[in-house]
Amino acid sequence: MDELDNLDDRTAAEAFRRLVRHLRHRADAQNVDLMGLSGFCRNCLSDWVGEAGGLDKDTARQAIYGMPYAEWKAQYQGEATPEQLARMAESVARNAP
Image (cartoon, rainbow, N blue to C red):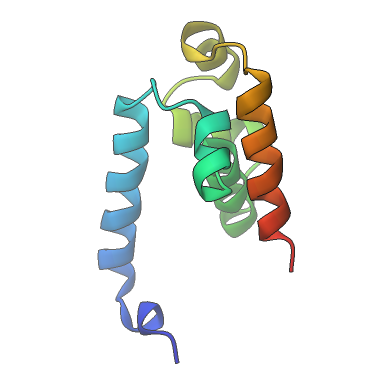
C-alpha cells in the first residue's frame, strides 16, 4: 500500500490547494519548463481536476489558473524555445508506461 493512500482527504486537499496557489504565484515558471522537468504542468493538473470532478475543460483550467486560461496565456506565457520543447518531449516520453 502506498503511504499516500493513508493521507486523509482534508490533508491532501490542503496540500493540493497550496501547490496550486504556489503555481499561481510563480507565473514565471512556464508550463513548458514544468513539463520539461517533471512531465506535468498546470494544464495536466486542470485535466486531472476535470476528470476527478466531472468539470469541463474551461472550468477546470480556471480553477487551476485563477483566471480564464486565455487571459493567463496572454499575460504570462512566452514563446517556447526549441530547447524547452526538446526537454519537454524527452520528459513526456518518460511518462509513457
